[in-house]
Image (tube, rainbow, N blue to C red; front, side, top):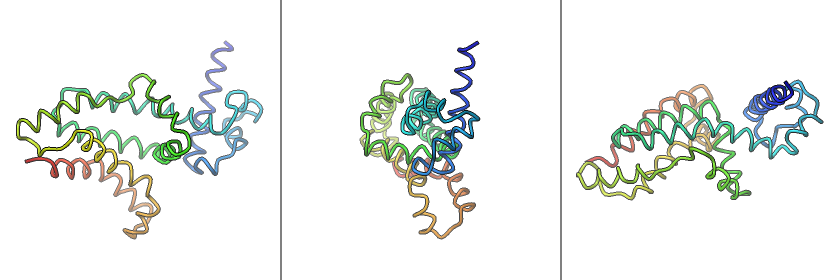
Length: 203
């Protein structure tokens, strides 16, 4: 019974923290606010997570544990290269629209805590691009795509998917749109990014 109660409390904390982090970001979130949202006292929150940083990492890992298997499955399934690019982009953009705090958190962590990535790499289902690399090589040899390093192609895919979320305030100002219009742009990128990349490499 106590184990179930503990698991339920931790789940409630993660759900509450996710909502607060999404609304206010890492810097603006307060542990007391998260405790109130989870309907527990602050002392109990600190029993589970000694600091806001540890709680933020737990929220990230919880979300990443949902995303990583999806991406890993796409990268290692038997679909052709172009379909793989489409599915990867669709899955990634759809997921980040639901978890918009993730890309900025990754940037924050990489800058001040590079060891965190090593922790992620040890997680089960951390995405592997080995099969993707082989498919890129085969597509080049068959004359389907222009010569390109698989690593460069993968970085292009990730960059085009991530930056519109990281640079949202700047991009909204540059293209002169409101939040509602920008959200529509993000939705369209589920297909726009993949087609842009495919058109840039196919022969």
